[in-house]
Image 1 (tube, helix red, strand yellow):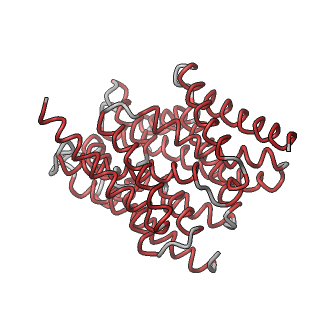
Image 2: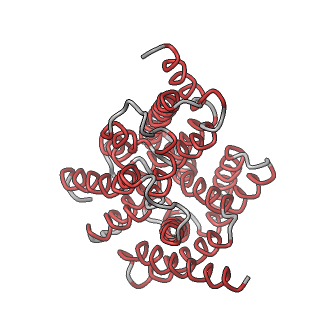
Length: 241
Length: 113
């Protein structure tokens, strides 16, 4: 690595080491405790974190397995919960790659695994700033930032997993509620557009209704029915105004 | 709980199913418009699915949380969100307040019964 790139990598790592790593850590601390409760061995918690690297998908997998859902439904639901990675990667990659880039396609395909809500949001904002104007600096910044994020997530997941058994019951309940709370606050806090608010309400309503009848399919149903309803309501609304 | 091999394979399958979207994004970047209606729909579906997941965990949880009171879980969500907003969107303040409220509520409940 030439010094300029090493600097970009270090900048990325340093910037991840504050709020991003800590917020992710809180989510994964709770995930680890839920994994312990679900009977996961530590290696499985780590494998899921690295292989899926999307907390919603990891939770969907855990929830649906605990409920004894069909394998096909589970994989489909996990995949759909991550569908937003498609437009995210689509918009991120051109910022690190153009005709002049010395890097090969396979390197970008590998780096795509690092894309997450946090790494994407920070990269999209930071890549506009003057110190990250060239493609190679951005590439190294992204790797540094992502490495710290995954490291923090894995570390806190293991801590959460080991901590659960050591805590008194009351604290155990608190730890188990951490990740659901984290998502509740994130989802409700970020729902700004009419489409996302409608999707939240429709998804929650469909999931709870279907849970009573067909629990193994309630999350897929929430996605397809709730999501499509929200999408269509948004279209109708947009046409009227 | 199914066997370790089976769960390991499921994790792998779910990892690949998640990666699919990331990989497609690399292969098709520059060729698709991220503002198109298809992506709007995809985003709605993913959002609704995750909302459904959280609603289900909070209202009808399995495991440890199933031993706690529904009202406490709902109130903890409200407390966490209000604290988050009052603290100018600080996630830690929200989480700490929500979890603290939940534990106090659980303690009071067990002390009364």
